[in-house]
Length: 229
Length: 141
Image (cartoon, rainbow over all chains, first blue to last red; front, side, top):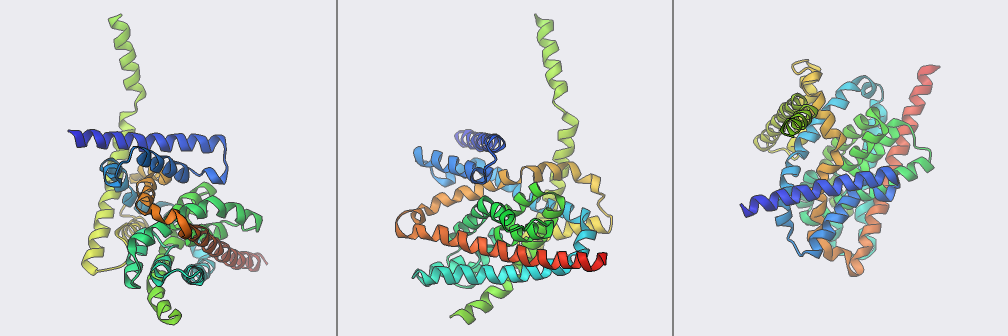
């Protein structure tokens, strides 16, 4: 019974922090206030203040997490509706994803190594632009630390949607193909959820970018490790 | 008074659109089923691609060969995708297990990861847009 109440409490608090963050973002649409960041920040703060374990939070939040799988499956619908567009832009999507994946793997690893961090951390930073489960798998393959990889994936996701759209606008990357590829390649599923704000076409491109870059990265990452070392 | 309460209760029940929520639940269950099938395929074939992405490809194919009509999933899909950022919160809060990273000298990893992310976004977005725009021009000529 106690566990049941704990679950209900954390589901309610998670919903409340999301509703609040969304309202806040609607009132002040600043990139620094994207709902995913504000609600994460609020909940982490709450857990720290009351000294509560992540496992306790997940008793309730785990049910929300269960809906993430079907939501990713649901991305097939914008993809299906936009299939003609995808066919038309297939070459640009393919080139963008390939270049993006290689840049992502290489730049993360190199920058972290250059600053003198130990190889374990650099290897864990390798798959940061890839969706979480694949990133964990890649980190394991290149003998990095999967749980550390997840943190980098979160920083790439949240950080990317916070500053990316602003910089893309500045550099006149405003075509739905450019926006979709950029968000999907750099910030995976969190980027794709941002791409939905730009419309169905950008979202469809972004889901393809996220999927293809996950596949490319899992093939390229082990190869790259042999070149880089 | 009793009549008034009954009336209010009736109004609230009427405002709560039961039919719509039933439809949404069934549609999300269907999506969840596809996710489970995707996960099973992943374990059976020992693939590195996650079950959710296999489910997505599966649903795309089922829509494409018209086994699943769009209206079977459209309402549930709309709800899930409108609130996609909400569904990430449980995972992102997991950062709390690595707060050591946010203290001391390793905090520099955060800007580094962000710089690398921005490079990826601008390079991949820029190149794909350049190719797309060139193609649009050559088609309109």
